[in-house]
Each structure stands twice: as C-alpha cells, then as structure tokens.
Length: 232
Image 1 (cartoon, one colour):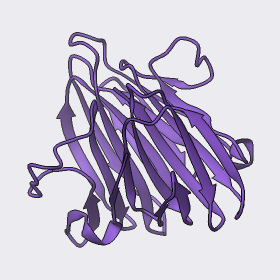
Image 2: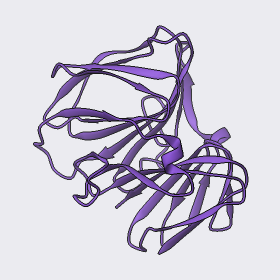
Image 3: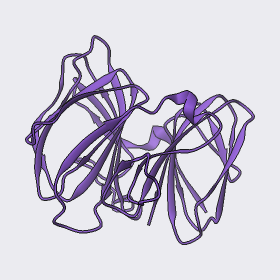
C-alpha cells in the first residue's frame, strides 16, 4: 500500500529565516492522522536563510538524522562536538539522556535539508553526534545505507533504533528494488526528480508512506535523488 502525501499539502510555517514543511505533526502544525509513521516521528523539509539558524536548544531520547540537500549546516553541541555538513552528506545526533545543540547556516546561500527524527529503541543511551560524506556517485543506481541501527551496516552512521535511512540516485528510466519486508514500513521522499513507486508517481519532495510491501519497486521518471526510511 502507498499513501501519497503531496508536497503541496504538507503542513508548515514560514518564519522568514526558516521556511519549513512538515510531513508529520510538528510544532504548531497538528494533524491527528499524521502523528508519525511507525518509529518515524518527524520529517521536516527546511530552507534556512544565510546567516541564520537554530539557537541552542535541548533534545533527549530521539535519533535525529540531517540530510543536507543544498548548502551546508554547522553543528555545535554541549558535548563539544563541532562540524560542518555539506550537500549530499549526512549527520546524526543521538540525543540519548540529553544534549543541547545549535544548527546554523554559515553560508552565503540558502541551506535546504531534510531533518528526520526516529524514536529511539530504549531510553538511557549516551548522547552523541557524527557526520559522514556520502558522495552521490557512490549511490548511483543503488541504495546506500546512510544511518542504521543494525550492526551489519558497518559503513553507516549508527543510530539507536531498528531502522535504516538510505539514499540512492537514479537516471531517468532506471529502476531498483528494495527488500522492505511486509512487516516493516517505508517512507520515501525524492529530494529531486520524480519516481514511480509500486505504480504511484511521487514527485519532488512528496512523501510516500509504504506498508504491506515485501519488495519495493522504484522507477525514475526523471533523474532523481531519493531518501528512504525503513522502520518498524
């Protein structure tokens, strides 16, 4: 089953410095039918103006994955971590027992990113942060695991959840499959381009909530960059 959630119908708010679209209920946007998708609690599509960002604020017991689409984001936190994540790369913050962080756009251009929150598998994990480059040409025609709670995904950024966040790039006409498993859930968003997922067209920045699919079939209708959450 595919539940299409068009970008034009997403909730959100324009704060001037931040133009945010929310795939699920978040902040002042509340939709009781869209409180999350399994362990996936947040998928925000943020555009952050140059020289602005999120001032220091706390989190706990959440796995927060940031997928940068354009520009870069600069992270600082209460553990002393500092880092700059550029377009195509990914950062993960495990909030664990508690962490305070800031995220600023220090660039001369708008930063556009997906911020993805996955509920942790248990309370009490130590907080942490990490960033890794994931070159887009390394994802050509195949899924690469960007963040994972499974030990076998040794090249991915670790998270404390029975989940994977994956990325792929496809040329128009290319197809790929993903063994989701009928008991698991998927949430797919094209960062760029349009794809067909199990016969349903999914345009740029639309969301596709996927359930009861053993093997997921995806075909690019245009050159596409896609992000997939595999969760329970």
